[in-house]
Image 1: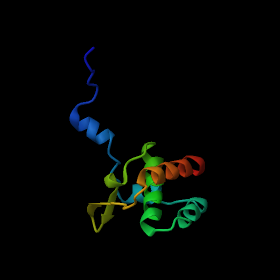
Image 2: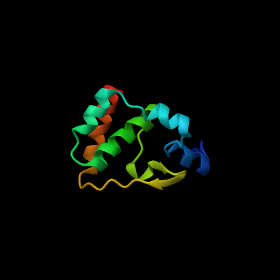
Image 3: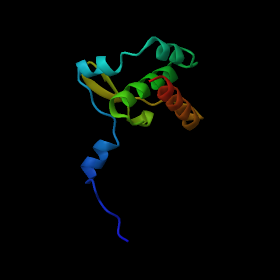
Image 4: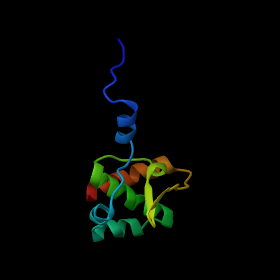
Length: 104
């Protein structure tokens, strides 16, 4: 049976990518409750703390998780990519998802 193409390539890429926020949306989705910030603070490396919080913010907005390589960091109006170096990135990402789902 042939595979159905519901989304074209551009639509699929947009669906699989985290949203790009304006300044008001960034303030809305990345204003975290105290408990979530406390959980992030328990992570050892600052890059992991940031990755956890970004995952939570993007999940709140899109109801989906995205790989850290797809995160957008806006600095002075330009977007750059975040690369979280970790040997056990997959298990750490799963743990972050569980915390986000339980506390989001």
